[in-house]
Image (cartoon, rainbow, N blue to C red):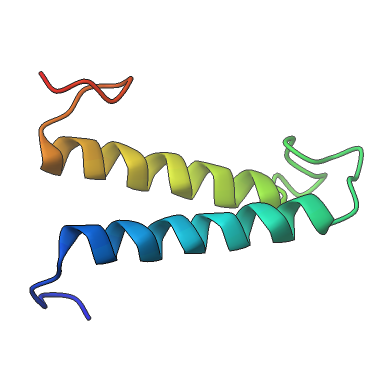
Length: 74
């Protein structure tokens, strides 16, 4: 899929659907006291790792699209 020309509306719809699935799965997962904090081995919880990866992806998308935080161009 990488490198293929894509309709921006279709790509946005697929991304939104994927993010909704991730949110639904994360919300259905039982909370643990260590969520968001490294465990005894220094590893992040799966939810915290996903959040960090999504934040990184959002930053990359903003940079490519020329946007600034808050969704406003510039």
